[in-house]
Image 1 (cartoon, each protein chain N blue to C red):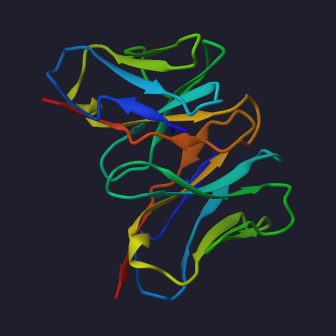
Image 2: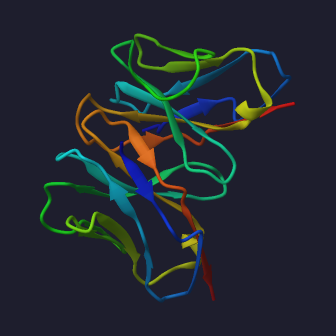
Length: 114
Length: 113
């Protein structure tokens, strides 16, 4: 049983560019959440998708957007990249909505903006 | 607003000894969950243990146990019989009833022989 998979694992982009990160949830999971983890910090919640809709959003600008597909996989898009967007981006999947369910994380995508 | 505080940036423990990693939380919700995750240098967050706010008994998972003191709003992780492979970052997190996780700043644990 494959866990949460993210691609790519590493990415280097230039300021002002756009980037798309991808996540496939654990089998049987229908909820996908995205987190940004800056160096030396804990992960910060970006947003969460359930039934192909954004259900919650953290304190991130509109440059951060996402999508969830019918197969529950998800994309995170970041436009107009800033140097401060350099971080590890983690995807987490869980089952259902509204409960204290265990979230499984992928290995992350390390984004470097130069 | 919910908040997690981890006051120990780093901890050292000798192999086979027990270690306690501290975590306090703040929330006005009655229903919430408390989690501990391990993050090795590879980056993946590995789930260790979960405690629900209404659970009266402390959660245990193998060598991991969660010392839940609701009145003090603390949820300390106890690792018994430490192993060299336990060296990693450890994050305490909480969720409300929407599955969003709020993380602390983490504690780096180093296990030495």
